[in-house]
Image 1: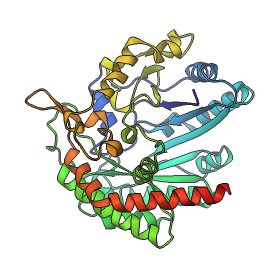
Image 2: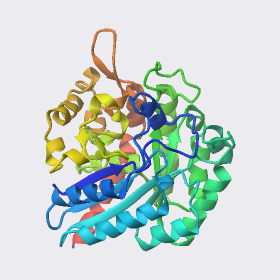
Image 3: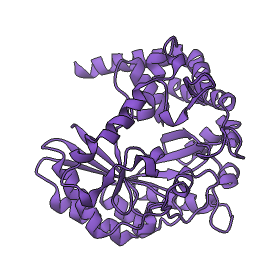
Image 4: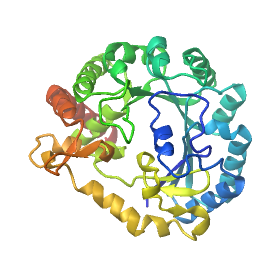
Length: 380
């Protein structure tokens, strides 16, 4: 095991915002218990001990915090967690801390803490003020853009490593250049774009924020044009999905499960210690167990239910078999698969990806060749 990735939800589904498209609020509502509690120091220490026991020297543990909104656990919890991790860390094992936050309560104390402990901080920001405020609102229904932007400025002023996460709704998809330029304007150069998820019990494409395959395909193509223009001009902007596709074009592995075509790159740890195989599958059906019942993480990583979950992701949608872009797409994220009337698995966004690769592949290959040449040059 080269790296153990743990996605921790210390505040479970609790959140101080009411984003209209929140997939985790939807998942939580579909569990017997919607909120699994705020993580205790006892649960945190059990997690840390089991994590370090699962790796050996020169390997890495990535403690990644998400929600809900993880900062609702309080700064004292994070201080305690980091202290325990530093105290219990075995010789030679590397530790990374990351957090994905809505930025709503970040103040100077949080920013100082993240800087001092070298956290990578992901901040959710859906483009400019009007785009962001349409779906990302607080508990009273008011827009959150000014407060999030202020938090972002606190973080960057302290040289905290920051990336921006934009959820691609139907509205964002219709304004790709506007979204990309607004995010670049913040000064952050590491961007992620993820398609919004429809509610579990609702037909695809029927929510007010729903992203259709047609809109997503158009968005990806236009976003790539903007990104590629920056690359040609020598301006580096990391768009994680595009970076992954460049790596695949180079014949190298990529960093996300959705683009690598395989599940199982991390474990989700809920507030009470419950374990799940994926952030998109934190429902009762896929609960793997609880930290407090384990002597080793191998008990869940090697369990029949975990293997069943992983094996499902190996059975690709039927249209993948003859697809010319198979080695770039690998079927996409399993959460986007559905069963058609004939009983065959299909990817909801298949048409979007086919359109994207047909539009961009020569340029992806050009970037891949340039990166390979640069790598050879650096080795000399």
